[in-house]
Length: 170
Image (tube, rainbow, N blue to C red; front, side):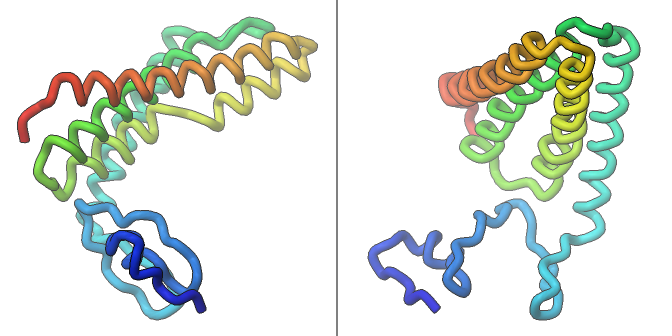
C-alpha cells in the first residue's frame, strides 16, 4: 500500500485509496456508503434529478434527429451539432457551477449528468461512423469522427473561457 505523500495537497491525499488515486467526489452530493467493496450509492432524490434531466435531454435529441435526419453516405450534421453544442454547454455550465455558484444538490446532476449527458451521444457517433465505413464512405467517417473530436474540444474550451470571462457572481 502506498504511503500518502505529505507534500501533495490534502484533497489529493484524501482521494488516495489502496495505492490508487480516486476521481474527485462530486461536491454537490453526499453518497450513501455501501458495504465494503460494494461501491457507492447515491441518494434516490439525486438519481431522480438525473433521470428527469436525462428524460429531457434524450427527448430533445430525439426530436432533433427526427427534424434533421442523417442521410446515408453523408456527414451526420445533426449528431455533430448535438455533440458539439453539448460540449460547449458542459464547459460553460460546469465552469459556472463549480467556480461561481454555491453548491446545489440537484443542479449539476440534473443539468450536466442528466440533460447534457443524454443530449450528447457517443453511441450514435460510433454507430454513424461505422455505417459510413460499411457503406464505403471511409473518408467521410474519418472526417466526421475527427471533426467531432476537434470541435468538441474547441467548444468545451470556448465554453469554459466564456464562463470565466463573464465572471458570474456566486
